[in-house]
Amino acid sequence: MKNDVIEINPEKVSGTPVFAGTRVPIKNLFDYLEGGESLEDFLEGFPPVSREQAIAILEMAEVYQQLEN
Image (cartoon, rainbow, N blue to C red; front, top):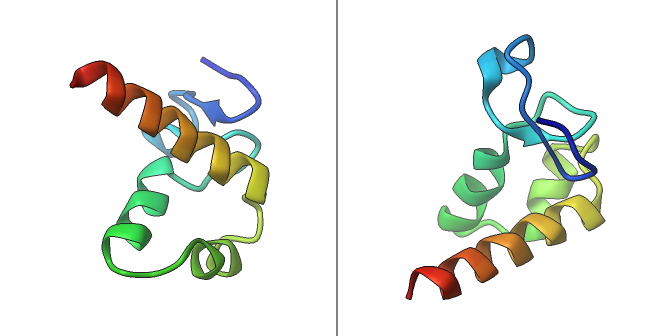
């Protein structure tokens, strides 16, 4: 699966969902935020990820959470 935000490719990080065009797992963003780090900290630590990609993931997570409730 590939789109502008998420990429899932068995040949990239064993199929772990990553930010499109990178090898940075989506989970890393949530780990940073859950650990008390800011979005800025995450973006500084993972320069291949764009701010737009990170915000799109957070927005997707918010919609998913609303659907679950």
